[in-house]
Image: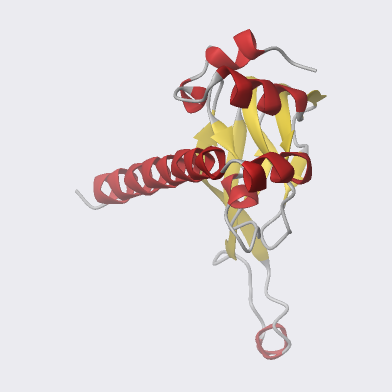
Length: 165
């Protein structure tokens, strides 16, 4: 179990009551992973969201590899050669896996450790009874997830604009 004091260090957890932080701490576990570890892939049902304690997590999406030959057979059988591109990098103090908090709880991207990393993993199933009991808790978690989405969209917009200037 992780401590409330640990969670209070990170902006994502600002605004939660001591009781809510205690629930979050009790539903989390610390994981250490090697570089290249996949936390989840696009389309996976997510049952957890994560806080990065150390290391970096690449948020990637699969795109058609334009440098590879895409034969007519590959095109007709929908067996195209794909590659991952990084759309965002999540570092210490930031969260990822927000789709675990927003129905239908399906990942919109891949998440892979870029380097050896330590994360806190928060189990949605263990959080759900507290969310059902305290709608303010659920509301705050949803707002926090929306802020993460908003920041990622803003960052992607800035990067896209920079490529075209």
